[in-house]
Image (cartoon, rainbow over all chains, first blue to last red; front, side):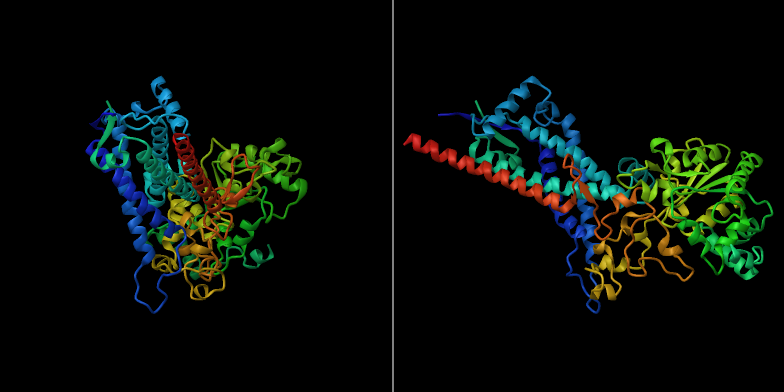
Length: 213
Length: 358
């Protein structure tokens, strides 16, 4: 019989980040898609006004700020979090993590034993890091469009994107990246929960995972 | 030309003159108390010499300027400045014209303003645009070297314009890519509003300095705000009332043109407030979305004009330009297929190992 111990992996701050990030992304998806392609259910003249687009944009901006706050928390934890939360735990530029990456890919291809490392496996960690970098661009392009006349954002925006139109294109293309990321993320988490022994899903609620002794 | 002479050039009625001074003052965002100062600058006998160069362009900027009236902006601008060289307006031709240019540059060395209309070809030594045997590149470098400042009128001069659109066969660029050592003001637009040109020149004459410029060297009084934020159709946007296609019920009712590709939300210009053609009209008022003509590379980035996100070049896809949405859907499909295959592989593996166990 295998023996497992329950280990505290995710701090309260990380769990708060995760759920703030997740819920803000869902909200941003729904409102963002309406802003991109508003469906024609808006009130026609003669009906009471409800400022649908204005309200949806308001929700989008509030969710955007939650997203940015969560992003900043995660960036802070990458450097100052616990041992599992720091980027050094899963960055692939370490021999230990390269070996782990190899094992993870093998396990995902049904070719090897499923192993658990406590924190992120290096494959997931690398993807999360990429998503965080993309999130910075998502936030910057959003702020550039939100503050078209703001001195700071306008000059940053022009330097990074050139024009508002290109910022909008980036913002829109990244929307699809997040959609794909969320799909794969949810699938793999469920997959890991079924085939692994960590209890990965309950872990993001309780902060504790089951590791082999 | 004959019309300008028929107007008698200087014989603008005082009423029209003050009207124009007031419009220019308002365009600069200055209070009414400044009208006198602007009018004084407009009347000033000290007329700055201007050399107006034409390169790769359609002359639409000059033409649209000359076709204004009540009050006649072109007359005002031409009164305000001492135009030493302008290929569309001058009487001289051929060698005589080139001689005028040479003499003007010598006579007003370091004092004249160089106005440029049109993009500049740089490929193959700039042979794709030649005037009097010299390339546009040579002429611009030669003239701008002695200018006090350069004003790039129109999107071609500011950012390269239509000839700089992909694949840019002539290597066309804007003035800012050639002239590095002179102050540049860009007044983009296709064409730019005549009053923005007038107000910029009047500002320089009134205050003896440049107006405040944005990141792309455009005067902030004219290009400081997005079209969307001053648009008369904005309430329909906020309400969620959109034109679905041209000619539909929403279009007839004057709803927002966002869904048919209006680029107002990503374009900086004062079109909704300054308007065109002296009758208070502009594209969105007339029922057509903004195409973003004051932004860099708008021929590449703002197309398709009737959709609000540009086409996307697929990397390594042999230059296939597709709709961003189509690419997104394809990627989603690929990810879903990947997940399905992965899940199926798991199920198959489980089934086969079970068989072995049995």
